[in-house]
Image (cartoon, rainbow, N blue to C red; front, side, top):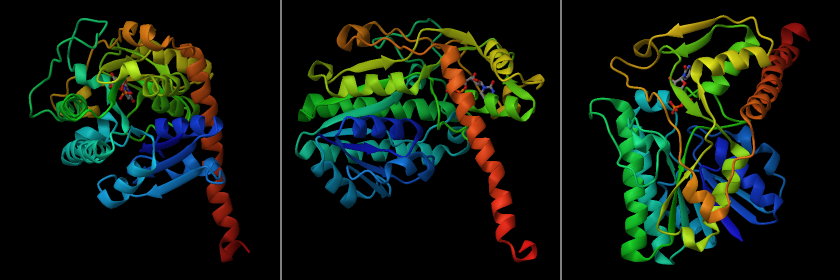
Length: 339
Ligand code: UDP
């Protein structure tokens, strides 16, 4: 098969590309490197089945060509990360809504199959867990940046379903819950890479709020399997599916576990939300998916435990930090003063 992955140099996209290449499929990616990186796909560049374009999906000529070439499209290109979203709301809304509209309208011409990646953020501040796909979405006010992200992804979902109902484009929506693993960067606020880096470097581990909020973390390998399963299952079309794990952990327990697994001396400190994000920031206290729907459809069960997830991130961050340390030495050796 020929697979197009928008946002293919991102954390999840690069793992998805890798898995399809391992299977022998042809993979095309388009990524503007806004949050993705060349480092994520460096190991794929020698593969003759892999083609990458450093561009935005808003470039309609290129996107049209790629959509025409491919059999299945994974639309992963989006503004991600709570910190980034709160800081750049205009870019978030534009990237998410325009990008999805362009991909779907191009896919409509030849009725190409499209998987649209959405997020558990669309459940908003719903406080009854677990979250079911048919549940009402509970949004906050429009002057709080976080909800613009949730709403922009909800619009993406409406669009995908509308394209199926009205124009018979076979779309499917995946609502991703806290995906983690190697290659995820902490730069945009994601908690596990942040805590792991802080712990390894002996810096303060920054728990926002009182740490009693919970999340369920899923390893990227489990998520990639589920994305492929959904995209390749015709019965999934026109519908929404949660992808996540049901193993719930508080953020404080998470900090303590990471500290223990890294043998770190780092102190755990509490940072008020308004200091971490913005005045009036609203967090979700619990976020647990109901995964009955996807389990029944494609037999999905996440396999990685929390410790396995954390160990894979710790190993990755240790390697990354070691290579970052090498850079100044390398530069120093090139400078005339030391030669
Ligand atoms: N968080 C934290 N310290 C950090 C980064 C995040 O305590 O350095 C908290 C954050 O406030 C949230 C949870 O960890 O309650 C998960 O945050 P993340 O941004 O990873 O995902 P999301 O909020 O989208 O679930």
